[in-house]
Image 1: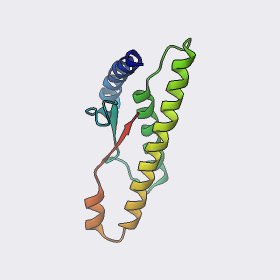
Image 2 (image 1 turned 90 degrees about the horizontal axis):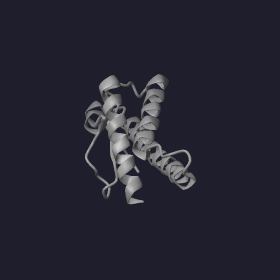
Image 3 (image 1 turned 90 degrees about the vertical axis):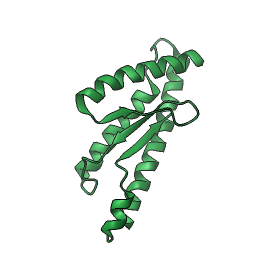
Image 4 (image 1 turned 30 degrees about the horizontal axis):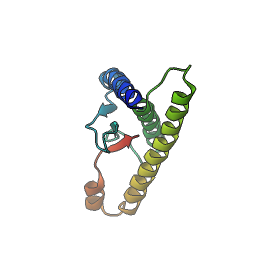
Amino acid sequence: MNRLTIAACTLSCVLLGSAASASNEVVVQKHVWDDRPTVAVRYSDLDLDSTSGRDALDLRLVRAVKSVCGAPDLRELQDMAQMRDCRVTSLARAHADRDALLDMRMAARGNPERLAALDTSTLRVGQ
C-alpha cells in the first residue's frame, strides 16, 4: 500500500506539472490531510453564476480527482479497485465542497461585501 501511495503521488506530480503548465487550471498544493496528496482547483476565472462556468469547474474537479488518485497498472485488479474507490470518494467530497460553495455564494448574492469575503478562488481535492 505504501508503494502504491508513493507511485500515485509521483504520477500525480508529473501529470500536474504538465497540466499546470499547459492550462494553469490545477496546481499541486502541500499535503494537507494526513499525508494524502491534495490538489487545489482554481475557479477565480470562472463565472459560477453561469452553466458553462459550473460545467468548467466540474471538469476541473474531475481532472483533479484523476490526478490525485492516480492510474495504476491495468493488470493489477486490486490496485484498479482501490483507484476506482478513491475516485468515487474524492469526487463525492469535491462535489459536496462545490455545492457548499455555490450555496454560500447564493446566500450572499444580495450582499457584495459578504460575497467577496467568501471567495477563496480554490477548492481542495484530496484522497
